[in-house]
Length: 109
Figure (cartoon, rainbow, N blue to C red):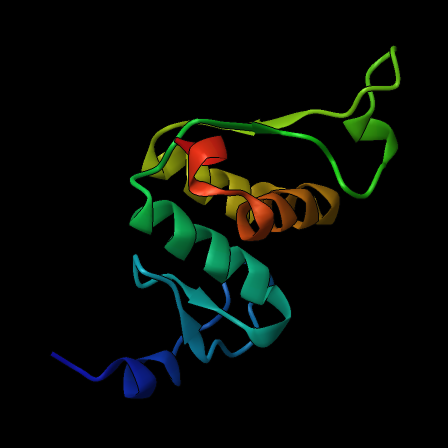
């Protein structure tokens, strides 16, 4: 099996198509600009893809409901986390990454 560092030098970021020196826990390639997405997949893999609901950190029109509350979620399967990371807006990714990096184990259980 090829070394990750060597293998990643020939890959392209799933989000933007740039050269991807990073691989997440599922071996998906990411560029430095999309490091948060890489870290989210790795976190999800480590924690067995939990179902999460969390507030938006950066508010965009898409993130705010009629009451002014901001809520996001990600489902409890790898494909849902993968879709969130490849298709999610920067607002969504920033909110999810911030939540994961600051959440205690009890909040995410």
